Image (cartoon, rainbow, N blue to C red; front, side, top):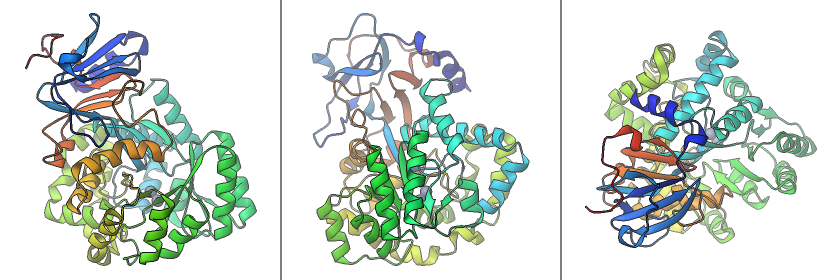
Length: 453
Ligand SMILES: [Zn+2]
Ligand SMILES: [Zn+2]
């Protein structure tokens, strides 16, 4: 409740302090260097102007101070694969008709606002949305950017481009079916002209389709992400120049991939976003702790109407169609992820958040934990979700804490380099220089400009 109250107070950009300083905590910059102890970060407007040991950083006299003593500061997390129009409900077959019957576009808007807020409060300051109706995608992105609603900064694909897809998922997410490569190129051009930030090319497209999409997108200066699981789809997307391979390695088909494919991906330097946790780990984790589905935080954020529908949809969840292939996926899940970790491939971090039982409030730390459990060092995993993801989405102003970068910073309780689950304890969120969680207005700590411990 106090979060909401504070957001309301902090929303108008004009009231933001000229200077803001986060002082006292350990600093993980996003680079592969040792953390800086007892650090300070100074923000002017929406930019970082200084970062380093607090003893060496001059805090401007007018700065509002966020005391991060005893915590760990790191770049705002970036989610490279989310879906705002879904909230972790059990089935698309019931979810989208339910939205239609409960307000239609107004309900869809509310759902997307909830998702964007959930992400932000979980320390995810930037999210790539890879599939939603066009107008709704552009609208939420722009309203967040204008500061009208609190939410993760969005980069949106709008509808994906596919061939021969159908059913509730295709309809609900607004997927575009094409019947020729020319059409695929034209649709890409139309989406780019409408203002999407990137294109999502679904599985099942031909090599010529991928080529047409990539050519049209690159002409417009935007990137193409492919939704690919099967070896052939991954190879086609890779060879036709798709910029990011989403889902590859998440055991949606039968890995391991051939060593030749892995080698080609590594040599091409083509980024991979595995989305490992959805289905295979989420299913097992929920079997071990089904109570996670009734997390009180969900109840509070969703409100009774949505919460009850999500609960209803998750009754008897092990039998949901979404988890039909989970036995096979659990068999292959470790090999799928390890194959890429051990290969040295460029790896980002994304989760398919919003998909069944994959709640926005925790999807990213779960995904990062899977990568760490599978052998990625915590430092590399944090970099994947920050600096590497920023490169993948072509936002080089994001992803690290250093002068000149956009001020997206979070602070967590506990050391994520010791236990990565510390990323689930996000206490402070600063996005674009504005404090959205854990700011000076929320606590009664003295506004102490020194960094004494
Ligand atoms: Zn996908
Ligand atoms: Zn997805």
